[in-house]
Amino acid sequence: MSGAFDSPPDSPEQWIRYLQGKLLSSAGRFKALGDYYDGEHQKLVFAQARHKEQFASLFNNWSDNFTGLIVDSVNERLAIDGFRMTEELHADKAASEIWQRNFMDAESNAAHLDALIHGVSYAIVWADKDGRPTITIESAEHVVVQYRPGSRREIEAAAKFYVDDWGRTWSTLWLPNGVYTFQEAGQTWRQAKRARNPTGVVPVVPISNRSRLTGKPLSDLRGVIPLQDAINKIVSDALVASEFMAWPQRFVTGLEILEDEDGRPVEPFQVAVDKLLQAEDPNAKFGQFEAADLSNYCDLVAMLVQHMASISRIPFHYFLLNGGQAPSGEAITSAEAGLISKVRERMLHFGEAWERVLRLCFAVMGDKKRAEAWSAEVMWRDPENRTEAQHMDALMKLSLIGVPRNQLLADAGYSPQQIERFKSMREDDAKDEMELARKYPAPVPAEKETPGDEKTQVASKSPQGNAGNAAREAA
Image (cartoon, rainbow, N blue to C red; front, top):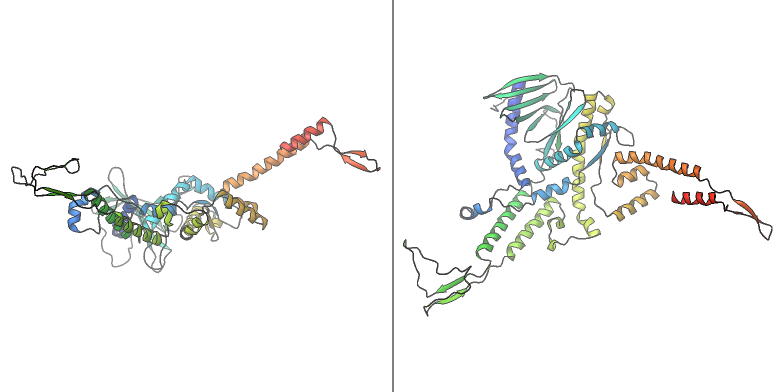
């Protein structure tokens, strides 16, 4: 149904067939990456055929999943607090309102997660019935884009394919001059609806994990899946060895071999159950083989995990290496340096996409200034984890060199909305202090003569003065 194209599509029907074929060509890769994150790994990839025949069924529901840890360790440090769309110092209130109305605190987390797994996810910007911008997050398993020839940023066409609850297959095609809805009918697509595209551009924004100048965006799992397969194979070998050779195997010689009615040998003892083995034949001799040492499996798995940690730039203590003892103090900061650099790189790529999403939202609203805000920036939450004492001490030192209060509050982890509320709270505190000062004025000093004819000021002993002092101390 995808068809073959010798020239660029020149109609919506041709575009939808072309993009469907392009999506189907990547469907297997995206599903495999998602399965690895979920722990649904290929079983015993490096095992011989005979080993698979004998033991593959034992490990159908088992996997030692490190791939989920690698993705989650990055994603949990990616959080957006707001946007600066213009030269204003504070977060843009209109951008924050759009973000919150579209539930993007949670949806952006899902977008980052899928981008880390598949290499890319998508945000689609449109207008609701009231003309307000809406943002929807889509998976690379359902959405596909086509860039203009020679461009890595300008999108020529995009489409989404999905199946509804009644089993019908639908697709939505975005072109700069229109939006088309199709329903699959046998081997063809039937156009169901056409709408005008008021933005004049394809309103689909790829949220790319990272990419080279050539090729597709890269998944964070691309380099670690072979190591994950090897770990699964070694651990499965260890489990089989623990089943058959983890305790001493016993043997007996000089004993008559009994057979059943079909001529098959009958086991004379239940070695794993019987505490006492005995035989009447004086020539019978008992013995045992040494139990297998399973530590070599542990050493090999530890080596593979260390390789995985190095490739993924995830700290060793996240994998509970070195006896599961986590480092402390400066050792943690040093160990997490690679992870923090990796997270900041993802912020760079994701940030460009979110800035474009917000510009499209303002284009939908007709706000030309913000729609062309090329100096816009994403306000990311600090990805580093510090102790509270270390963090506050660093902020106090920054205040001494003149860093503004709002910047310090942002560095302390407060959101733009919280910082905005702090302003009104400080105003309320100032009003309360002024009210206390009005009710309990400062005592008027009295003059007192000293033996040297010098006058000194002493505080009034009046009850009102004492109450005022007490009120001010309480305030």
